[in-house]
Amino acid sequence: MAQLDPETIQTLIAVPVVFGSITVVTISIIRYKLKKKELEMRGSDAELGPVVDALREDLADMQEHTQAQLAEMHERLDFAERMLAAGRASQEDRSG
Image (cartoon, rainbow, N blue to C red; front, side, top):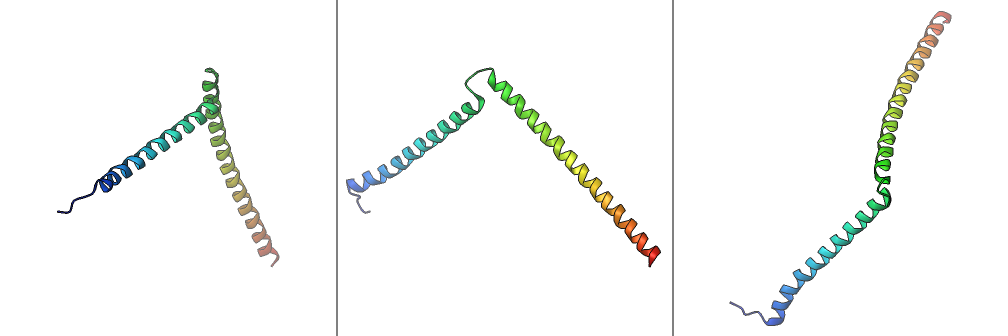
C-alpha cells in the first residue's frame, strides 16, 4: 500500500473543508438577502404586514375576476362573430 505524504493528506482534508465552508457562507448570504427582501416588502411597521397581505389577496381576487370577465367577453365575441357569419351566409344564399 502506498504511503501518502503529509501535504497530500492536508490537501485531501482541506479541499472539502474549504468547499463546505464556502457553501455554508453562500447559503447564509442567500438566506440573509431573501429575509431582507421579505422584510422590505412587508415594511418595518408591524401593522403594515397584514395590510400588505390583505392587498395581495384583493389583487389576486381582482385578477381572477378580470380573467373570468375576459373569458366571458371572448365567448360573447365568438358568438357574435358566428351570428354575423351565419347572417352573411344566409344573405348570400338568398341573393345568389
